[in-house]
Length: 93
Length: 119
Image 1: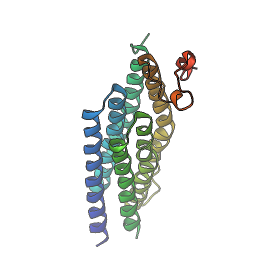
Image 2: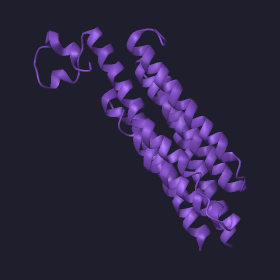
Image 3: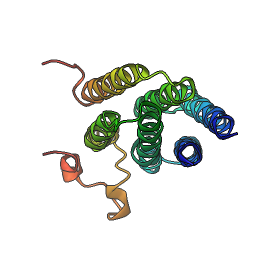
């Protein structure tokens, strides 16, 4: 009974994070200016990382942790690079 | 018992992430929209990571703590990222001639408003 409760809770969490991804995607399409799109892309990265972590929790696979860490690092680097690009007009100067 | 705590923590974290994204979708200006995603990026991620620590520690019968590395990383990088993004947005707004934050205090945009995000 306990494992089925955890499975149901993880499935519900995956559905909630999927709704969050839909919200961030709508803002990505609507976003009036570039900084709104960068912000929603950063939120998309965070939500995708949470979805991967929840998937690892549901399947019991301990190696999903590495992919979640890689997604977090890539999200930070890409958002920083895009913010630098919006500020200066080029990434590396 | 442990899996009940894990399930509750996972659902709470996912609800925080959903609340952050709904706030990102529904708020009006960019400077209001910056605030909600930090909720999912810090506390939501933290709750799901604590759930992961509890579940894998229970599964492997030893203390598994390396998931907290992601939490530390997110806690350090989220403010840095959003500060850079808001600085870029202030710069772009000032370059376009509309300075939303300065207009709360002054009726006419001052020439020194360009230096708000400087440092």
